[in-house]
Amino acid sequence: MIRIPVVLALDCSPGFLARCRRVAARGRFLVRSCEAASAWGVAVRLRPLAIVLPSHLHDRAPRTFELLAEDAGARLVVVESEQLPSGELEGHITHAIGEAARARGA
Image (cartoon, helix red, strand yellow):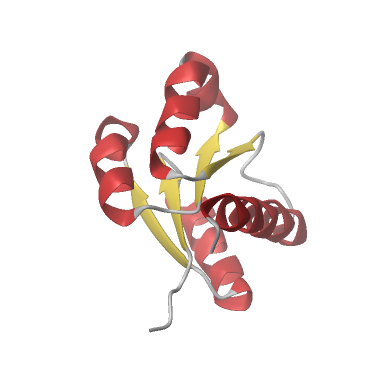
């Protein structure tokens, strides 16, 4: 069985989500999105390796998002600006995926 890493994007604009998906095509991972309000249920179901969210969302409840990532076995990727260059975005996400995969023993 081939497992494709999943990245969960929370409350991202359509343009940024499209950039994440272009990065995913190069990085060989899958991006799913949802609103923060439904993140817990989606994360438990999908078990993403990384959770991408804008810093303004993270800053409202940092401990909540840390617990979400911990419960899902994921790493957080907090993005200061949706204008982050694609190469940097890809680097942050692939680093998070690698860390989470190692922690899971995958």
